[in-house]
Structure formats: C-alpha cells, structure tokens
Image (cartoon, rainbow, N blue to C red; front, side, top):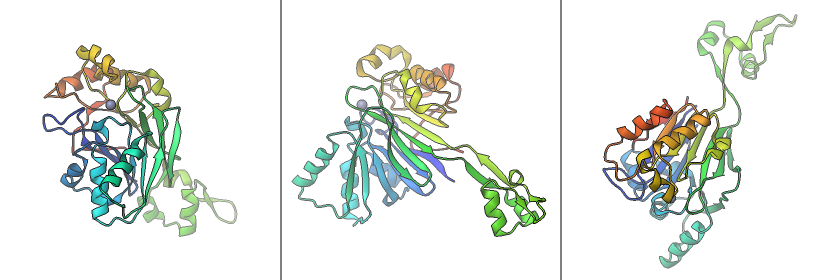
Amino acid sequence: MDFNITILGSNSAAPAHGRNQTSQLISWEGESFLVDCGESTQHQLRRFRIKYSKINHIFISHLHGDHYLGLMGLLGTYHLNNRKLPLHIYGPKGLDDIITIQLKYSATVLKFPLIFHLTTPKGKIRLLEIGDMEVYSFPLKHRIPCTGFSFEEKKPRVRLNKKLIAQRHPDIEAIHSLQKGLDVKDKFGNVLFKASDFCEVKPPRKYSYCSDTSFDLTLVDYIKDADLLYHESTFMEAEKARAIQTKHSTTKEAATVAKAAKVKRLLLGHYSGRYPKLEPLLDEARQTFENSVLSEEGFTYNIK
Ligand SMILES: [Zn+2]
C-alpha cells in the first residue's frame, strides 16, 4: 500500500548549492511515475539507487529546460540498456517534436515503443488510469503552457485486522466477504464475524503537484483535500515583484493556496538559487500554513 514521493531535484533554473533541477519519483503500489525530468535526473536516480527501468510513465509539466532537459539522456540510457517495455510520456505540444528531431539527427531508432500523450492546460483531464490510481492534469498560470498533475486513488482502502483474523480464524470465503464490508452470518442469520471489527477503512489518498505557477487560488478546485501538496515556492515574500514578473510563487503564496485547499501537508520546492539556506523559506511558509515541509533531495515523503 505504498504511496510516496522521492525528491530528485528541488532547485529552479540552474543547479546551485548542491541542489538540482526539478524532478520527482512517485511510487504507488509497485508502480513508478516520474514527474518532470531536470538535467540531473539520471544521476540522482543512480545516486539514490532507484530502479529506473521500472518507470513506465513520465509526466512533463512544461518546456522550460529546468523541467525536462534530462529526458533525452534518460531515453538514451533506456535505448542502450535494450529496454523493451513501452514508455509513456505525457507533456505539452512541442515535446514530441523535440524528441523526434533529436532522435533523427543522432540516427537513433529507439528499441522500445515510446508513446506520447499530449497534455492540454484546460480544466481537469484524466491522463491515466492504472489499477485504483488515476492521474490528472490541470492548468497552471505560467509564462508558457504548463500543467500540474494530481495522483488520486479511486476508492477507499480496506485494511484487514490480521491480529483478529489470527485469533478468530474466519475461513477464506468469510475473509473475502469481510473485505467487501459484508458481515458473515450463520444459516440462522446470526452474525459470526462483523465486518467493522475486522476491517479498517481508509479514505483514498491524493498527491497534487503544482509545478511552475503564479499565485492562483483557482487551483483549489483541483488540489483540494490533497494528503500532500507540492507547490513551487521559488521566492520569499520580499521578492514578490520578481515572482509576479516571472510567473512564480512565493512561500507565503504557496502556503495560502495550501490553506485554502485544506490539504494535509505542503511540500515546498523549486527554490531560487539566491537562497543558499532554506530555513527562512520554511519559516515564512509556516506562518501561514503550519504543516509545511521543505522538499529535500533524496528524501522520501510518505502518504499514509
Ligand atoms: Zn518554468
């Protein structure tokens, strides 16, 4: 029942202070999804010993270099490693042309099927359904077309109380009924095992990723009640004019969005290179939204 996010890159624009450009790995029930692919992504995947052959879906938010320039390198490595599994890439118009032209001029015919899915920054659009997980895109306000992504479980999870099963040993058929929320009765209609005693029902989980964006409260519609929200926080409030000019957000603005969306936890990131130390950004966010954390490379953030 794993659902977690590993940060591969946390900086904006260029590498600085040991930090790399944006990329995250989302793990869910044995599936691995890559979100954005800054130029150090391959190095970071190796450094943190992540099996990147398991990645079958890559989501690119927009075509500023700090979010996708690692993609061709990664595709090249898959090719050299004789990857056979299809790779799905979800991204904006133009990304398919960029990939095609690079392959053309290196005379490379990929050894695996690459399937490109065009994203459109208009409303909430379902990009992928895999088991009980759905991945959506939604529009962000940036200098070029840009989308966020939301990873949402479809239904509540049922967790069996293994201790109670060991004590009262219902048979397999009874366990299946309990998992469906049905009480198990004898032929006279007496309840033998009560579903509510054996199962804990946990609500579906949600992770929302807001890549580069201006401060925008209309995002609340897409990200509300997320268990974990990543929202870029390139600048501190003192640099608000710069944030407006470059269509980025401040830590206070990220925290304001998190608060309005009633998310459980806020993950900050996409830090400007002007900040060698990040604690002031965290302090500023926490003044508005207490449950804020800094995204740190190599750290994994669990959603329970
Ligand atoms: Zn950007």
